Image 1 (cartoon, rainbow, N blue to C red):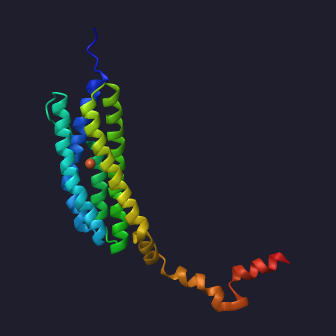
Image 2: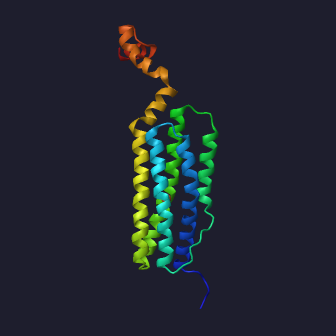
Image 3: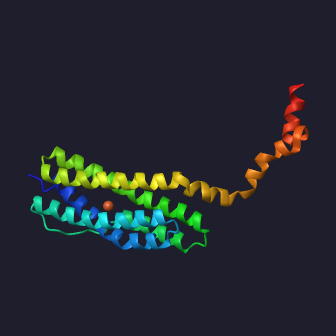
Length: 196
Ligand SMILES: [Fe+2]
């Protein structure tokens, strides 16, 4: 006969948390898009903004399916990630380094959401809320796809371009042994010496 909350109460609480997180992201994503220099990255943020608006509506359907009031509760977790993103955008990085940092921010947000939706889907299933589970799974799939898209942009050139801008001399250094012939670098000489 206790008044202790149940998993259902925790579930509704988490839904309110992620509902607020999605709303915060609809405001943050345009800023990320605006700061991106790579057209591919900009359009990834823009299309995820559209998706995010759909996710807000999907959560409203989840609340309806549970006969719960549509209400958000401030999400400190995503607020922190967005805040860190803002300080990065204020930094004076070169364009590609900024793009790499924007991807890092976006992926932090995606992983936060993936964790939240993963839990929500599992809890909905466990409690037999099948409509809610199906809707939440759709959003989880979108978040995973958005995360993958960011990985492919990072690994498809942005990281390397940013790295090359950070260490322009290293490529030249790699070419040195060919140019220097047997004389080589001090390290190469040391290695030859040690083999004797
Ligand atoms: Fe989302």
